Image (tube, rainbow, N blue to C red):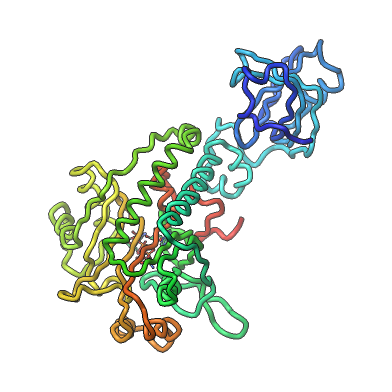
Length: 439
Ligand code: ATP
Ligand code: AMO
């Protein structure tokens, strides 16, 4: 057997004198002549293996002191309580099985003594992931997604998967990645938008999807990826306020679960997670514009999009007033939202749309959707798109489409804001950006 326990399952109280086998990487070898310490690291932590020369078989002792850092080993031995050892115990080995020796020097340090540049870390992600802090981020990501699934399933959402190779664009503003699909041109999907709406016509009522989205964003920023993971929902017989409530409940729920179940990882990252207070502030677009104009040199007029610096001004203003990072901007001008956003019946200049913000960054956007076929076709045309190429989508609106609403939230942005990461690439295993196509 290569492993009986993770290192964090062993404790001095219950394991004294017991034989265990741990498996992992050689974190450190300290050879003091008469005594040799080998620290083994696995996914959950570290354990010290102690060899006293006089009491150890010569071959075993020599094998231990010759171990190269980051080699893979399986170690069998007896647990002995020790105040001096980390976690209060050490393992006195009877066998050290070298499973795979690592080359040296390593592409980067794993002890945290030398902080590598993000680019170096991403180039050698396999080594970077061995650092407890990096490992913690992706353990928390798992916890986030696990709870997103749990929460949405509990309130009757059905998980779906829709195509990533598609024929049309949905989100104006960002561009598409064209690909060759046999003999035709196709694109990588920017959003499951059209498909999740079609599913409403199919009577699936409430669906969610967690999947990749692709955006040919030209700008190289701390918060844009070219391949991101989107958490999307669509819900029938709902308006935008109903789905905003689902969104804030989901976020609050996810924060609570992470705080409850990932305390070890949060400690590792030095994070004291604050659960956002519900309900989130709902700021009207026109109020946001006023805040920008009152607090800066900018002179925005109704209909302008909020750029990066405007988002900063509004986010900071909201934070100063409420102490909260999360807030909605609602009632956006119809013209600057995608074609599918529903205009208010009594004021069609404004749409039933919203963005969820976190301080200075957009976290999610959503809307109640247009469910009338003719109005939708007109909106597509008025945005300069050819509605014929949307027939596969528009057909679903002709034969019984219920009123519906939904949103999409970027998983990486959710994680980034939760963990206070400086760069979105920190929370992606293998980020895709303008310069990075491998690993
Ligand atoms: P969308 O999904 O609507 O394209 P986004 O999620 O990219 O928006 P943000 O990241 O919040 O939105 O950015 C807000 C606005 O600022 C967007 O219009 C975006 O295109 C623009 N923007 C973001 N980064 C830059 C940049 N480095 N230079 C210029 N414009 C930028
Ligand atoms: P939107 O275009 O705002 O809306 O995208 C939804 C959310 O996805 C995330 N996101 C990104 N994250 C990292 N890098 C990117 N390049 C990137 N682009 C988007 C953001 C963003 O808020 N169809 C609508 C959603 C809906 O209405 O249901 C849509 O795609 O967190």
